[in-house]
Length: 411
Image: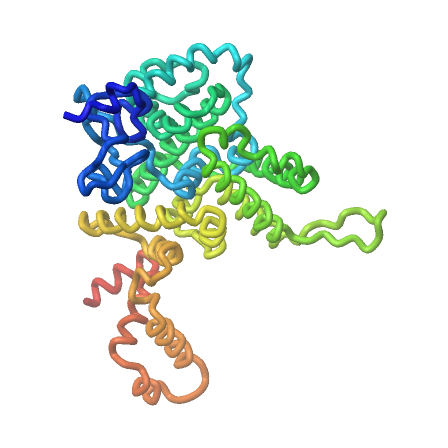
């Protein structure tokens, strides 16, 4: 047994150890590891305890289990926060908890640091649950959230507002992730379901806030607030995304040119204004993308807005919708044609044979036969049986109920 480091009172330097920051028996941070290489810090290649990826779950001294932290990358997390809070929430609220007298919570958080120093995240969650710095996060969510923040919180000075910002942000992401999963699972189900609707009032607030950001540089610098205290990489990603969203949405805003400084502001082009409003709504509430697929009203511009501002959320949506689609097919659920068209727009590939380039060409060819030109007999030679079958399939989709019954009687 090698207890030299423990006997000398040297603190463990392995952040994945339950005794990180304090001495413990059999600590290898200062001794020769296998291969004869000295490991004088976080375990390096060649050390018996080296791991390329942090261990999510491990047993340390005393047999306690360390819960896995919140492991999502900044882009994934921000996308899920957008689902829960919308773009306006990201620009205005993230990192700004407006706590009253945050300094009075310092003593309470000092005890939290002790729990985190011993890697006891469950006890830390119990200690924090219901406290103002924990916001509305559930006790179940607090353990992985604190495990994610723990390395910085253990080594940095206590900042109640920074802790509240980090907990609120990760808690919001967890809620958004669950909300996304719920709506995707409801996509192909029939009957009454929770509808996702655009909020014109929130849209106008978003317009005002974007205009304010253009006119106030300090407001742009304040985006993210205290989030960077314990989640600096998430704060940087959020700031970059906010700038990208502002520029993208401003590029869609219809121009209102004035010929002279004192001229009245001309009216916007209605069609362009409606398109701008739609993109604002989609970016404010990304779940509208799922609703548009369900309604069969999705546009390529909707997908482009989400893909531009929330690229990781866009990828996640495609993955989840694909899984839901496979599940729907396995259960033989009927998918209306309008939904197939919207699914094709979202997934970027034809979801029905009538949407392939060959089928589209056949439809165009069939339309030519209805007009003046070559005789019908001549055109039949140019259209294959397979193509005609695709045309009949498309035509039948638009039959009235009486026409469908007549077709069945003929068969």
